[in-house]
Length: 449
Ligand SMILES: Cc1ncc(COP(=O)(O)O)c(C=O)c1O
Picture 1: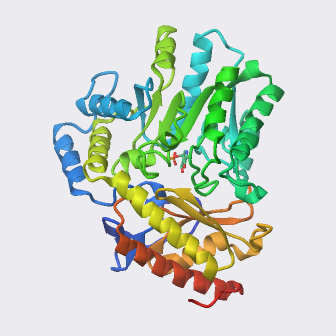
Picture 2: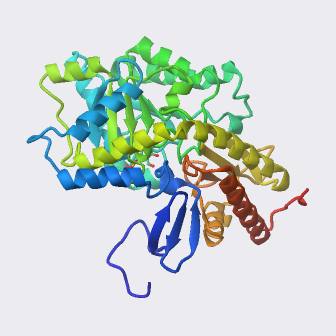
Picture 3: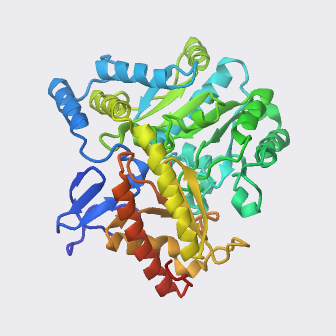
């Protein structure tokens, strides 16, 4: 593109123009094919251009594509709420639609606050979260986010919210399978609540399996259960941010199902609309919603909430996930892909950790696997490896892993329909890309077996 574009996002860098996308593949207008190894930003969970979803959207568009919630109920919104509630933990059967993850998180925080007011606990307003974390880019969601490059410019405009360390056992040399490790990190929540004054703390927000900021961090044994106990002991609401982990990618519809410690409120988006329409939801316990509605109503809402076209798409996405057995495939292919990624550690000594659950997977690059020292910042590995892979036709997703300023991890999260042959293809392109990155960066590579 030679002419200056009127369009802008975060920076001046531009990408090729997308022509079409089918299944796990995408093509640019020059005809180059890419394997979508990160489902966009962990969004297109059921693959691109699913004909059943497109047909459901076409049918809905011919009936109506918008109906404002103050003027009409719509059948797709009602049906999707019913279906979502049925998939949610017991008691979490009230659904509030939004158009994205940040809106979903904002909604959880505001509902929690209004619940505290409704039950006469107006002194509760602090929402504890983890470092690092990403919960969205709007100011409320950003206040509970801990990722300095994104938060620092706006610090003076936000009310500081308390943070506790994410349970990154691999950095601290602790065994993630030892319940003592889970207790060690979860107890940091209790310490923080006590330091803040328990009567002032409203909620704790956590991603059950981490997204981009922690690189698919899986909580250590016992962590999620202990967190639930602590929230109950001090009267906090437990909010699960399943914007990335929800929707089936980990092998269950909600990642929290892996631990059986249910939250009070859930935020979901990305895989919920799976890229077909902007869609997200807050799912809340009935007792919370009833208290807020009894006290005068929820003072919050978005114009596009419950859009019938978005809800018809969301409903068709869930139907596809269920009828095509996609969660079972995510679990099976995730196990295979994770072991193939772990296998790379022999060849590439600068891969320090491979982690994740189902098809929410990541690997982290380090200078030294024993000390977990990150690669030199100036190498910009998080950027460079993504660029090399992109040139080779593989899309992966990266972030700085250490507070946003150093460290490099990479999410490899293909759609849930990925096949074994496509995993071979991902691995082939990834190996070639790692080899070229290593050569450029002067990093050692062991000989192929
Ligand atoms: C865990 C989590 N929460 C919230 C968000 C914000 O979602 P959105 O970008 O749709 O506003 C994201 C986006 O990456 C996310 O990963």
